[in-house]
Image 1 (cartoon, helix red, strand yellow):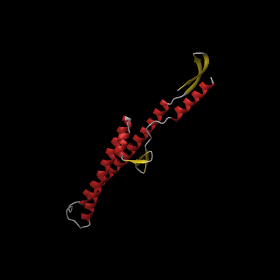
Image 2 (cartoon, rainbow, N blue to C red):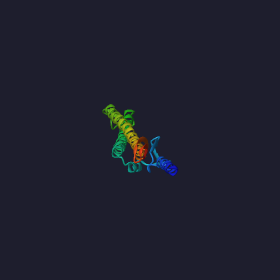
Image 3 (cartoon, helix red, strand yellow):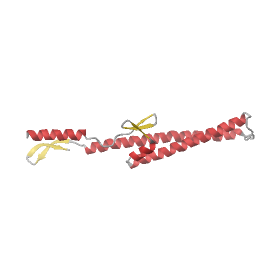
Length: 159
């Protein structure tokens, strides 16, 4: 009986120290790290195996890139219209205010998409990390119950 208790304690300790094989992804200043190593967003997409988290990160990446492109286009339009308004260019001589407003609308929409994309990426990474924790908990579920055993009433140790 003494050896059984020692073996059971050893197996319990082994179950608790078993790592999940996959480490969580950390985000610091929109840079991605796993085990202290910097990862690109494309590498993060390969690492994430949860379908819902993968979809969130992928759509977030697309929205972030689209927002950045719209920001650049909007700022370029506003800069060219401002330069024509100050008189250095006569291309938008008729109505530079409309070009400035279109550029501002593009930049505003781009900023919204960029921020929303970053938030989607963060949601996907958090979902992936929580799925890792849930899988670890399910795999290493250990319980001690008082119940019927093959020798009568006793302590049942399940792992």
